[in-house]
Length: 142
Image 1 (spheres, rainbow, N blue to C red):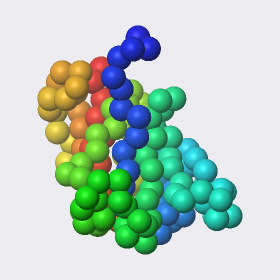
Image 2 (image 1 turned 90 degrees about the horizontal axis):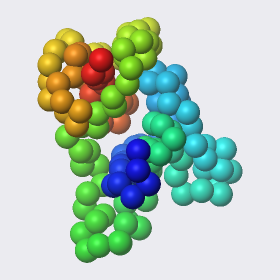
Image 3 (image 1 turned 90 degrees about the vertical axis):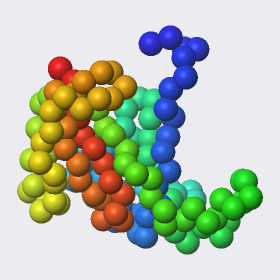
Image 4 (image 1 turned 120 degrees about the vertical axis):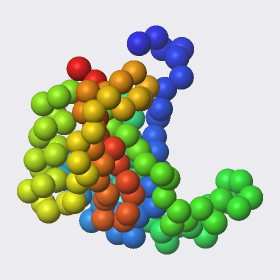
């Protein structure tokens, strides 16, 4: 990948309990927590989880909503999750994710085939929700 290409850096999700959310993403989704210890010690405003070398998901506490002043009306977005976030992964990781979610009794959708995404048609995909109601799609292309 070229250094001068545009890439996704992070997505910010509103969550009620950041530590619990990080635990869900670590145990059920398999994503590594980032700055969790610092958040727990009051040294970071929120924790994150790592998707890959270049992308993280920030787990923003709903309590931070009143402080969201980067643009007018930003605080009004608190609690309004995005439609969904899609994680693309290799086939074996896709199967492992679905297995972990099912082991933890996280409801998952049926598997669909040939849905369009950033790299064309995905061989398989399915959806699930995190404990805060954020919807995720998991897919693989090969």
